[in-house]
Image (cartoon, rainbow, N blue to C red; front, side):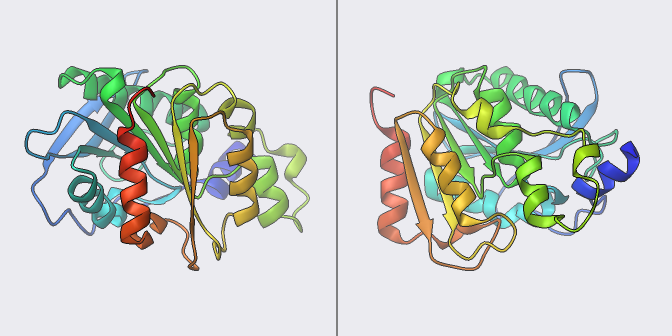
Amino acid sequence: MKSFEQRLIFFPEREIARSPAGPFEDVFFEALDGTRLHGWWLPFPDARGALILSHGNAGNIGDRAAVGDFLRDELGINVLMYDYRGYGRSEGSPTEEGTYSDIRGAFAYVQSRGFQPESVVLMGQSLGTAVTIDLAADQKTGAVILEAGFTSIGAMGRTLWWSLPIRGMITTKYDVLSKIVRVQSPIAMIHATGDAVIPFAMGRELFEAAKAPKQFFEVRADVHEGAILRLGMEELRRLKEFLLAPGH
């Protein structure tokens, strides 16, 4: 049953089909439990901050190469993209607790490059929003960006698997709603109105539960991951101002 559950939630791909268009470094580091992970470091000249990107449940970092380029170039920040265990060139097999260990390893790696927590932005996409919030609930950072956030696996089960008699057997929780209230960092949320995977209303519910300072960016499109790429110039300006606002 546990193996079936993992196949229901995680859809890793080993082959990395694409790489960033701009300069990047292949990097390897350890998760908190010692699992060897792979990622890309996308440098931005003289940037004082770093962003950690935690992706969704399918594919690997290669599918988000364009997002990494966008974040580095538009936000003017160093970017660490990494694969969870079992994805891409990272060792192991994915589990909920394993992904929590993975992001903590990524956070430690960024600090080893000289970035203090207050200069680190955490960004999660889809499943990665749950991974991001688990760390952010325990560790204050410069800011948090959530794209296509959801409230819990249970809520997603009612949305996606309503016809399957397995909801009571699923042990994976990813209970974002109960953790987001503990986050002390400023939060920016991005969600597409036509998201066919995670309902827009679920993203709004998560936003309402978060503490201020916070800001919501509604994208009128039918995309899931990658909604940040659809932000207009004015929205992107607002996002950058929010991330850089003094007093956070």
